[in-house]
Length: 112
Image 1 (cartoon, rainbow, N blue to C red):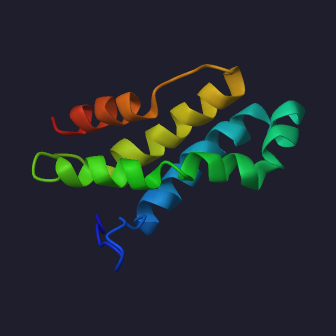
Image 2: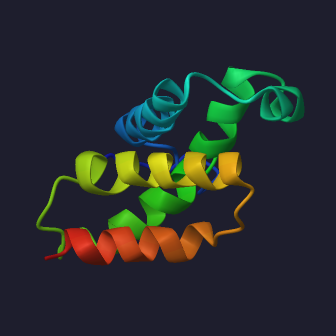
């Protein structure tokens, strides 16, 4: 996991985290036959919907970095992609979930 920080101390998003978040979200959209019309309007289309999900990448990477020495699974496969899928389902279903709690749950599962 690339956990570099910017000159301002802000954590950068790992490109693999972003890619796997987007893949997870896209898997859900593909399975559902695309983005529902009301969500398309709300998020300004599919790209806005995906952007909403990948916006969680810095938090997910920070939590992953904290658990890096305990991870026994591959972070993008076992944490980022399922996170993207779960967040996509939540947005589509209008379900309120705590992204940090979801991240913790997935990371704990990936720690064996």
